[in-house]
Figure 1 (cartoon, chains in turn green, yellow):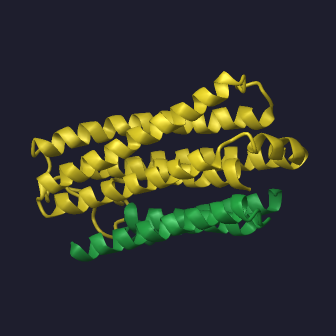
Figure 2 (cartoon, rainbow over the protein chains, first blue to last red):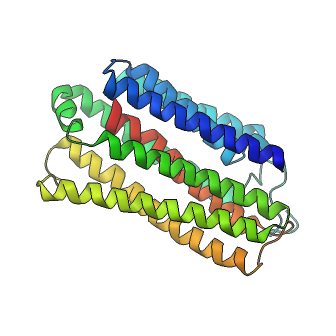
Length: 81
Length: 195
């Protein structure tokens, strides 16, 4: 159980770092990198799904569904942007 | 599958964490918000200046704080499930209470943001950007509101020792629903506030 808590804690720190980095890039430094910000969103999605929702313990079909979903989001968003 | 109150069977196609029924709902919900996000980006491409100017009317600070609040709430809820697995009901209820409090904080901040917009006359029909803003964040708000109710029920049940390490499927399903609220926000936050 201790390992799960440590992993959850590390995941939270990584998620917060990615959120802050996305906002800094977009609003403070005003760097026009929408693709990078969308990629960060995809990484956050996978981290929450696999660690907090424990998709990592689910059947490969559910794991694949998460990656399929993120791929559709990223490809769709980048092609429409 | 012999006992539906058992926690999920690791690696089972039919019993992912929280059970297959909640996952069917989650899949449908996520694809609905995915569709809305892509339609939003399509309209953004038609009038990029209008969308950029409208985006500048949103507060990235409130949006960022709300994102961190919701993600941290999900962290506490994930920990609560770990605690139930070792029959630590007191620890679990504390974690749920922390998650629930942050969920309420999210709703309060969102309510404050909504109030700011309404006060300056930015409503549903202000322009296309804000029609999407109200629809997407509004539906998400309703999901979080329902999730807070689920967490309150879960807190009460855990506190009264209705769950233990062999019987926590309902709690796990509620936690998975709460994480879905995180996932939806992760999808809509960057496209509404950042890019």
